[in-house]
Each structure stands twice: as structure tokens, then as C-alpha cells.
Amino acid sequence: MAQSFDVIVIGVGAVGSATCHHLAKRGLKVLGLERFAIPHAQGGSHGNSRQTKIAPYIGGPYEGIILRAYQLWRELIAESGQSDIMVTTGFLDIHRQSEVSSYARDSKPGEVGFFEKLDLLEIRNRYPQFQLSEPYWAAYDPVGALLRPELAITTYVRMAMQNGATILGNTQVHSWQATSSGVTVQTDRDTYSADRLVLCAGPWTGKLLSTLGITMTANRMSFGWVWPLRDQKDYLPESLPCWCIDDDPGIYYGFPMMTDVPGYKIGLHWYGRDVDPDNFDRQPNADDEELIRVGLRKFFPAANGPLLGLRTCLYDHTPDDVPIIDTHPEHDRVTLCGPLCGAGFKFVPAYAEAAADLAATGSTALPIDFLRIQRLLESP
Ligand SMILES: Cc1cc2nc3c(=O)[nH]c(=O)nc-3n(C[C@H](O)[C@H](O)[C@H](O)COP(=O)(O)OP(=O)(O)OC[C@H]3O[C@@H](n4cnc5c(N)ncnc54)[C@H](O)[C@@H]3O)c2cc1C
Image (cartoon, rainbow, N blue to C red):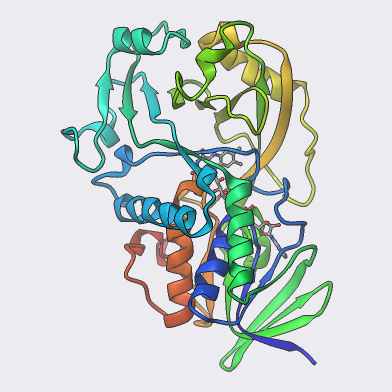
């Protein structure tokens, strides 16, 4: 006999764990189903750190989402006591082009979304760790922060279960069906039924939504940690914010050295190559190391020291690289929450709240119109 729930959430990664938390907090009977052990390093939410910032989103479609996400990260920390989930480091966004639309507005100290513009000389004076030869400039966002993905997922799962959710790891969903009376989900463990379903499958979303005719892809990414050759204290959060540098073939990004993983973390945000998330080479290789060495040689020669770790990870994409948060176009009992498109961690609490709203009530007050699926169904 199938077990029954109010809502089943498929995928307990970043946004799935947060969605379980939001739904369970509302008193709903929730089942979260995750194919791997929780948390894991197979999807898009591992590697101990993610970046967040507010300034570039003010005045754009993500403004309401990022502001709500910041509120909800702070609420999560207050409710759980896990202050390490978000560490304010500041965020330095380094550009080559003189005009960058996300920083085109005026910005005053004290207002929401304040940022400072630094010219090359000011960057060099404040952050001598960077070697910048081109006419770069930077926007510094003082509320930029480092988020810890594994700790956030663990905390969301713990809190959801304390509020009565059932969450099963190592349980792979093979198929799901929705009818006018409910949803049924078949796993390698059992069959489960519920009133509603939320899909939070990240890079695997395309596999669970193959009938929609929307191409959803996954990319293999890599990043690593090195031990700086000298002046290691210059890479601590007291001296270095989270940062990004606009370069070719993508954007180099990095984090100050924290105590939970040894070394200085650096990666390249780019489009890599499409892979099948169930069948690709997860093992980091010499090319992955060279990708970060290129960035280190160019921008941080003094940090280009011994390798401490390399990892691969998955980005996920929609055709326009904007996430999908919406009710399924053919099944009103099913909510879609992903793919989050390679830069989604910072928005996770707000995306999850919107998904929980849609699953529980059919609507949300959060400004998610630009995330609705119709835009992709209307495309030629
Ligand atoms: C290297 C890297 C760096 C990034 N840096 C940043 C950053 O600095 N800032 C930022 O905001 N974002 C960043 N991102 C993006 C962000 O981390 C992701 O968008 C986000 O974490 C994805 O969360 P998710 O819940 O959608 O996916 P995941 O966390 O991957 O969760 C999906 C879950 O669904 C499960 N699942 C899938 N299919 C099934 C099934 N059939 N049955 C059961 N379970 C299933 C998976 O196992 C997985 O646990 C980065 C991503 C990567 C890869």
C-alpha cells in the first residue's frame, strides 16, 4: 500500500532541502526523496563555499528575490544557530568593460544595494594580492558573503525533520505521475503518493521532465584549492573578500581561505561542455588543474602553490539560462523548481519559499514572473 503525504519533494539538494523546510514549517506532511546520501558531491551544491551579493541585482528582475533570500538566510541562521552558513566577506566584482549595466546606477552609502567603484590604483592599494595588468575596475559590495552549501543543506534537512518531514536519502525516483486526484512517485525503495509534487532535481531535471520539449542541459565544471606560496594571511577573510574577475573564456572566481577546508579556492565560471549527469568523467584531471593554474598565474602568481584539492561539479541550464520556478504547464499539482542555472545558490531560500507557496496555495507573492515556464514554451 502506497504511503501518502501532502507534498513529495524530489531531490534534496540545495533548493529541495530548503523547500522541505518551508513546507514542513507550514505544518504540511512532507516527504523528501534524494537519490544520494545527504549532503553529497554529485550535483551542483558541494565544495564548501558559494558567493552572494546584492548590488548587481538592484533595479533588475532578481532584486526582490535576492533581498528576500538575504532575509531568509538570516532567519535560517537565527532559527538554527548555525552562523557559519553565511559569512560576510564583502564581494569584489572586477571588470574590463567600462560600462556594466548592473552597476550603471548611482549608489549612496547606507542605501540597500550600495557599492563602491574602485579604479585600478584603488584595487591595487586595497588588495595587493591581485595582479591586474589590463585597465580593470571593480565594484565592491560590502554585504557580499560566502555561503556554505553543505551546512545549509544539512541545516534545512535537520529543521524540516524536526518539523515532522520524512526525508529519505539513497532513494532514487524512477518515475512520477499526476492525475486530478493526486500524484504518485515510484522509487527504487517503494511507491509513494501525495496531493502535490515539487521537482527540485537540479542537473537531472531534464530527465524527469523529458515530455515538456524544453532542452535542459548539464555542464561539467571544476574548481580547486591551493596553498599560497607566501603571505598566506593575505588570503584570509580579514584581508580578502569573495571576488570575480571578468576574463576569457569566462569569469574567474575565488574565496578567502576559511578554516573548514585548507587552501585558497579558485574556479572558472564558464560553459564547459554538456554532459549526461549520469554518465561523465567525475574524476578531476590535469586539464581541470590547468584551468585554475591559468587564472593563478595571471592574477595571483604569489598564490600559485601546491594543489590541495580538485573537484568536479555540475552546472544546469535552461535554453535562456534563467531558472524555472512555476507550476507545471500540464499538471497543476506539480511545481517545478529548477534548473537554477549555475548561479542559483544565493537565491535558494527565496526560490524554495516561492516553490512552497505554489505547492501549498497555487500562487506566490514573490516576484517570479520572469522565472515562469511560459517564456520557454512560447519560444520557436
Ligand atoms: C562549481 C559551482 C560553483 C557555483 N558557484 C555559485 C556561487 O558562487 N553562487 C551561487 O549563487 N551559485 C553558484 N553555483 C550554482 C549553485 O550552487 C546551484 O545553482 C545550486 O546549488 C543548485 O541547487 P539544486 O538544488 O538545484 O541542485 P542540487 O543541489 O544538485 O540538487 C538536486 C538534487 O536532486 C537529486 N535528484 C536528481 N534526480 C533525482 C531522482 N531521480 N531521485 C532522487 N533524487 C534526485 C540530486 O541527487 C540532487 O541532490 C555554483 C555551482 C557550481 C557547480
